[in-house]
Length: 341
Image (cartoon, rainbow, N blue to C red; front, side):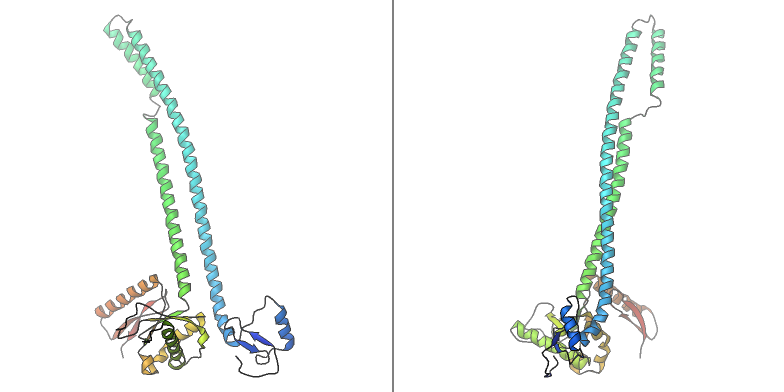
C-alpha cells in the first residue's frame, strides 16, 4: 500500500482495509513492532481507518447499551408471564377448594329435606287444619332463620369470583403479550436500522447494458467511485465499497436506470457522502441529475411519506412566499420552512 521499496521486511496489516504498510512508512520503530507482534489483544489500524474508527466505536457502544436495555425489558416481561402462570395455578387450587365447599352445601340441603319430612310426619298427628298450618309456619320460620345469613346461591358466587379473576388474568396476559410484541417490533426495527446504516440509494444513475451480471456490477462500482471522487470531491478507495445492487426487476427497454443501492464498509464514509451532497449542484451534468438518499426502513419510509404529504398541504393552504421541505436523518425527519428565491 505504501508503493515504496525499503530495506525492511517488517510489515503491518490494517485490520479494517487489509492494507499492508512498511513500519518505516508509518513511523513505527523496530522495538514497537516487536511489541505489537507479541501482543495478541493489540489491534492496529492505518491512519485513514483509525479516523473512521473514532466515529464508529461510540455508535457501537450506544447500540450495545440499547440492546442491553431491550434485553432487560424482555427478561422483566418473562418474569411477569411466570408470575401470571403461578397466579393461575393458585386460582385453580382455590376453585377446587370452593367446589368442595359447594359439595358440603349440597349435604346441608339434604339435611333440610329431612327436616321437611319430619314436619310432614309431625303434621299428620295434628287434629285440625289450623293447628297444621300453625305448625308448618313455625317450622318454616325456623328454617328461614337458619338460612337467612347464608348466600342464596353459593355456586353463583363462586362462579362470579372465578370469572372476575379469569378476566383480570386475561387482561394481564394480554398486556404482557402486547408488551412483548412491541419490544420484539422495536428490536427488529433497531436491527433493520443497523443493517441499513452503511447504505445509500442513488436514483437516476445510468445502468449498464452488459449481459453479464459481473460486468454490470463492475460498471456500477466504477460509477460510484467516480461520483464520490469527482462529483463530491472526496477521497475514497475501491475497497471501501462493500457491494452494489440494483433494486427492482431489470428491463431491456428501460429508459432510465433502476435505483442503485451502495453498501460501504463503514458508516463514517456513508455519513461523509451525505454531508457533501450539496456539492452536486456544481458537478458535471451526469452527477447533477442524481438524487441520493439514505436507505430507510419501512417504518422510516412511511414516516417520510407522511411528512412529505403534510408539507404539500402546507404549501397549498398557507399563503406567503415560502416552500416546505422534509429534512433530517431517518427517524428524526421534520418539516422546514424555506423562503422562495
